[in-house]
Image (cartoon, rainbow, N blue to C red; front, top):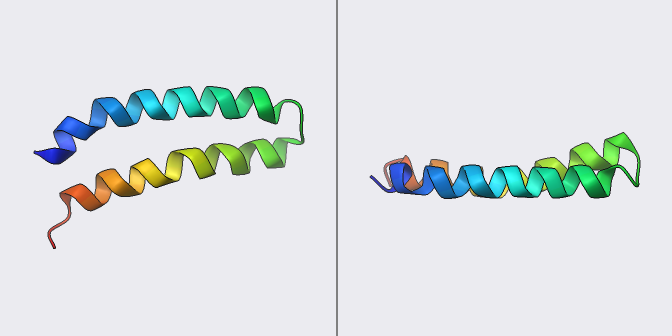
Length: 55
């Protein structure tokens, strides 16, 4: 149930942070942009996954 409630928030967060990372990444190298996008999207994805897995 928690997973279903967290998905919309995660999608909004991922889109916002990926867009921000792309803007900042355009000022740096493409490798840094990829690292920044991964760093901003991975934590909430891990939280959403942990919310669904049994303890």
